[in-house]
Length: 161
Image (cartoon, rainbow, N blue to C red; front, top):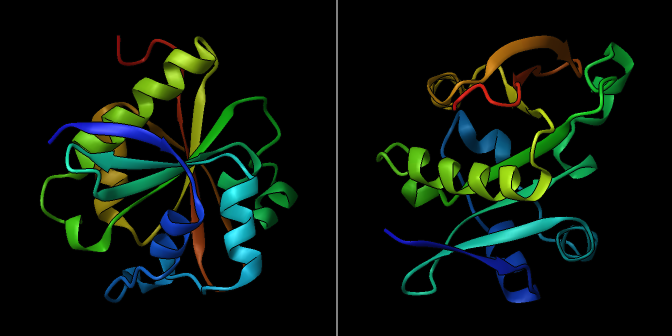
């Protein structure tokens, strides 16, 4: 599968917000509201499409990739590039995560060069954590919003080179 980055637009934002994951990943389901559409269009969100121009996933950079309460735990104290991502529900668990995430990382590295990359993941998401560790991310800080435990993971510059 060939992947391409595309500017987020309203059609893609609505498609993403309508994605429905099965339990326990339904934690990642969103609500389709005018505010959520606005966030995807105005913040640093990007769509990833395949060679047939079909939506595969999305990613975001910076503040939208952070879990707000994490700041109270010092999870975002250092100056790293935060990334967040989502793979289309129908594509999860089928081996598409590695090429998708590699594509996103290549873009981030080419854009931000030697700045370490950080991501935040729900601790129950063992599939994602396994992928991130396989690519070279290491576990850092755990924190909770009272319902879910989150984990930040870090890839220092040059870890995978």
